[in-house]
View 1 (cartoon, rainbow, N blue to C red):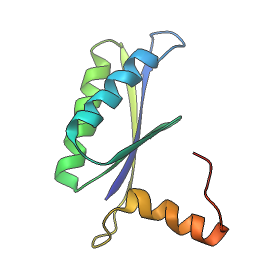
View 2: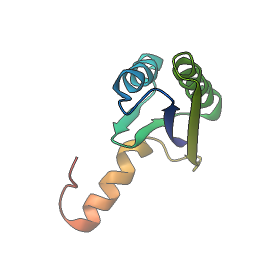
View 3: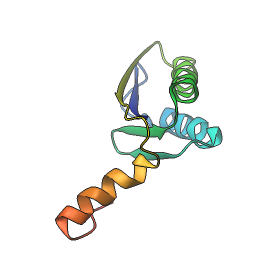
Length: 101
């Protein structure tokens, strides 16, 4: 399963870098495969491993924000491992070149 999530702290001003760094640290320390991007983070694993990580990230951000919006999008395709990498490779194969990272 791939889960892309974003956490938006509200009421802390325009800069969110400190909160984003805390989220990425939690995800990194989980040991699950992940990719951070400018708009969120994608984590790969099973439901019981991924969802507690997202919850932990949400709880960390709300400690320093009066309000938090967390969005989650799930792509669940059982039997297809390493999708965090393979989905991009599939597109690159069709393009005949690497996509920008």
